[in-house]
Image (tube, rainbow, N blue to C red):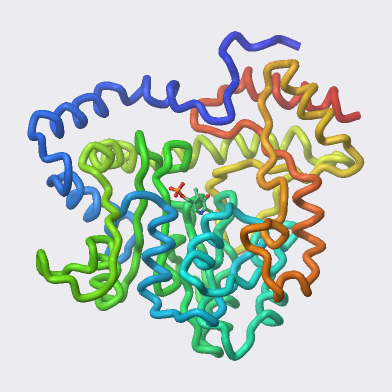
Length: 379
Ligand SMILES: *Cc1c(COP(=O)(O)O)cnc(C)c1O
């Protein structure tokens, strides 16, 4: 098989930049020339454009996706002893901010097909102390929000959606109505980390809400607890999206739908290549969500994953394990609740998943090289 000339990366931000260089460079230059680096007009314009794109009333920009989660949890008025339910199979930030604020993270197992929060496990985890649910739209696909919203309503729980990996994905409810990820619960949070589907050239994040009071509270928390300058009404933090990042995001938001289509085309190529393979399970799709493929994640069966990863690397094909260990067993997050719970699906996934290169610049020659190599190595 033909080896491709260009280096294969998990994410190719250089190739992506090459195509929008003139737009991005001009936008960055404008900020530098104005020297309005903090709270410049680009931040407000990006905010308005993202509100329009998502169909949400308020976007509150902040410094990164972890801060967005922290601000959301701070805005929820929780006290130590309260419980917040999160999936066990996710990036640690979701859990970290909950534990950091002295609130108890309660983990639930995930669905082996979609990798998202298991609805039966969620219901079982609810106690009188439960105050909020943080569904994570993992790898680019919405968690099953209709039943999650019904459960939250029944138990009077707040929903904070972590859509750091799924910006732009859409969920369809049984009445046919559609909503963008991050706009279905009371608060949504996202990250603009460079490798995310909508990434800037540094750190960035945002919160989304349709609730005016929550929006104001999140804005205040992100700005030292101030509504009026030098008047500190509540405890806050300092968390800003800077103007240069907002300028880059304004350019990239215009291309987001095209980038999503490029990712979906890569996923379709992989799906087709691995279809029906006895040892390679392609990522499952939930019928009510589309998938924006932040990651394309295989579940291997009867394959020595470490050996495969090494053999791929020797052929210049990177592959990554998202995520290698369940959060409940991490030393920093150990608690009694999770020590007494079993997470067979998360445990299985952590031992068997492998993510392949996924980005907006993969061409057919590269995809053919990657898939043929995988198929040759997994007999
Ligand atoms: C990336 C990510 C975050 C954190 O975002 P940062 O901008 O890196 O702080 C939170 N949750 C999930 C699911 C993520 O993938």
